[in-house]
Amino acid sequence: MTTPEQQPPTPDPALKDRVYRSHMGIAGGVLMLAIALWLGIDALIRGEGRTQWLALAALILIVPLVSAFTLRPAVYANDDRLRIRNPLRVIVLPWGQIAALRSGYSNEVVDNAGTKFQLWAVPVSLRARKRAARRLARAAAERNTPARGDRGGRGGGGTGLGEFGFDAPGTDTDAHGLVRSDADQVMADLRELLEHRGDAESAQGEVTVRWAYEVIGPVVAGFVLLLILLAVS
Image 1 (tube, rainbow, N blue to C red):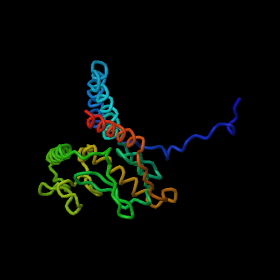
Image 2 (cartoon, rainbow, N blue to C red):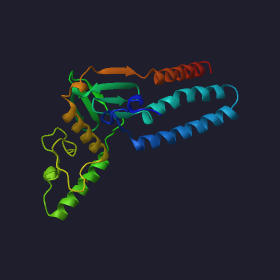
Image 3 (tube, rainbow, N blue to C red):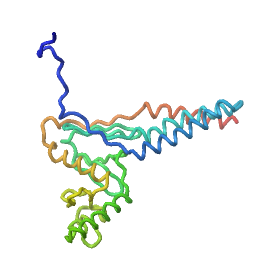
Image 4 (cartoon, helix red, strand yellow):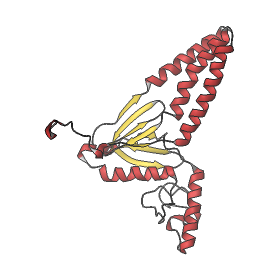
């Protein structure tokens, strides 16, 4: 019988990653991959001569490229660091190295050296922001209380986001949580983690950037093979 001293240690729940991904991006990527595989496999089976080689080269190029820009992007956050998996790079930033999380026409993180990294997994949807603004306006009208974050049809004056003020620190939220779009809510969650963990001892360290050679290699190989086949045709 195993004694308590012999049991393996359980991982600290505080270090468990929160994962943020674009569900619409994944759905679009799956659809594009299905079409590419359907056409490519059909050309491999039914094609003749150089057609089969062209189909193979195109698949080697397209499949990892589409996967990289749709299925691969993700953001992982825990109490110690933010890990960003973009199409061609993986960036790890301890919270102590992050200067700001910004939103405008894209979501990005800025480190203490001033380097900007885009969050591909958290794309900005202007339509979603407008829907959130309309819901906020309706909720405010029902309460007969003006929405302070929506003065003059513009939200978050002075936040640096122009008309997109839903995402700024200190922006008011209504009682039903209808102010922010999904992407802006993710950024608000990340800002909260940065505020609480930025000075923690375990959240210090160096920023690391790694190129995704497992994506770049197949894409370059497929591109070169395709060029060679087209050149000799």
